[in-house]
Image (tube, rainbow, N blue to C red; front, side, top):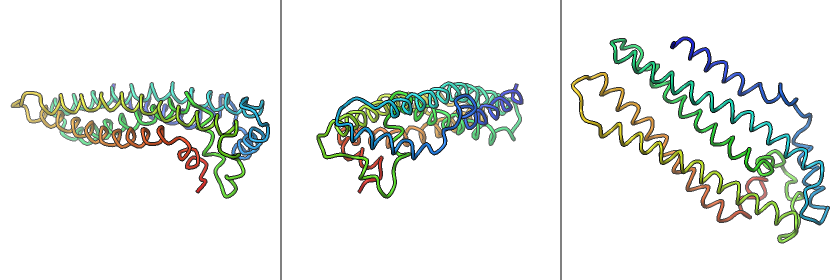
Length: 235
């Protein structure tokens, strides 16, 4: 069981890296294409996305939707692997403790990847913006209040509110897991105690990181114009 879960986890990590490009094809000069599409959007003078930008948004949505599916399987696989390793440790195999902690950490990392890819899949237009950042990023934005900037600012706000919702949910789950495991009745079985406390600590650290993400996302959602400049690397 442990071997099968380990192999599946490794295969999913490889799929996470390789599958989107294999299924969708890798666009040549994606950053350049995004920059040109944003310039076209700015120059159009209207709020409607030009065809080139629509195509890029659709491509980026599919790219991250594939990653969402893969990370869901990764999260499940690493969670099951952590549980299996902790069970093996509790049955007397002391060497499995380190592996169990590692699998627990991988579960947390899979959760983070899932959150990021959900955010990008829900608002793919904003997820494209960092690809266009560079020395001439100011050329991509029109004057404040222009149709293109108004659309982008609105999408940036939505992008960060999505993160607040998803990361906030994950934060609540992590806090609950950490608290439940930390406060459970003390047992005479040292290995059970160690397993509970170690998992509680990993969940607590994950919750701390998620709290920072939520706080940053709330601030960015409330100041979407500044966040837009940050995503494009505009000072």
